[in-house]
Amino acid sequence: MSDISSISAIVTRYFGADAELASVRPVYGGDINEARLLVLKDGRKAFLKLNSKDKAGFFEAESRGLEAIRRTGAIQVPDLLDVGIDNKEAYLMMEYLEDAPKKANYWEQFGRELAAMHRADTSAWTPGGLYGFPEDNYIGAGAQSNEIRDRWVDFFRECRLEVQFQRAVHYFDSSDRKAFQSLLDHLEDYLPEPEFPSLLHGDLWGGNFVTGPDGYAWLIDPAVYVGHLEADLAMTELFGGFSHIFYESYQEVNPLLPGYKDRRDLYNLYHLLNHLNLFGGGYYGSVMRIVRRF
Image (cartoon, rainbow, N blue to C red; front, side, top):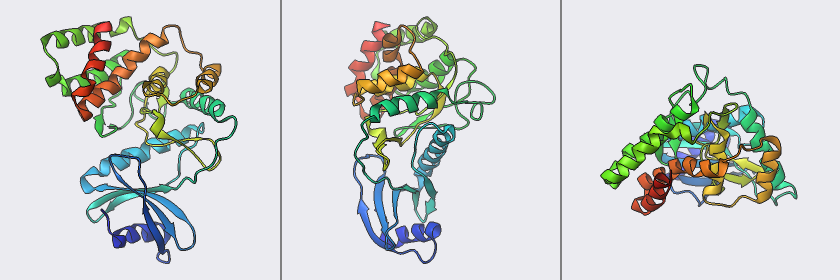
């Protein structure tokens, strides 16, 4: 746990030598980083994430992801204040979002804003191809490969499913491995190439959006890359928490192609494999049910 003198140094580096801390409060909810609400004596607030020095790459990737989403101009993300290393700790400091009641059209606007983000131009991030991202990043605590590919199916096979499967190979017997290889070999039979590439949040479950001070949804903790918009939509359904109004409003802008509900499980196979690698064998059954189905 970082001491007050270290946090004070981070604060004065950004806010200036005259900035003084009034309080530092723990913020709970994540399982990867320490988090603090910083309150300055003049009333200003900031949100601070802390981790060990060797985890600086997590915060650098998060800051690049938030900035990419911001550049679309489609949906809100918190302002980035500072990112770096102080002594033995890596840190990310950003705008603190005050709680506010949801607006009456919260889910409607959220769906339309995410749809607009998915329609934003992606050439700034994948100039040498269509799918991927200029840098690798993280999906939760797991490394995420974003090597550029010209085809979506190739990207999803090589940079998503294959990578996670190889990490988890010790969970599978020869029959499992044969079934998984068959799925990879026939992925084109199930996944279409997108009409257009989309910037994706990449880890869009119910814990990675919050209600901001304007009463609308703000995105946090991204694992961004350029891919098929269906992959983001699939993740929203993996653990629930999104209103049916969100999906209806989304499809007013981006109608989903027939067969999405079947493809949804394939996209979520990536996240279930990641959970298998991060949290253990309890996810084995969910993974193999999808693999054997296809």
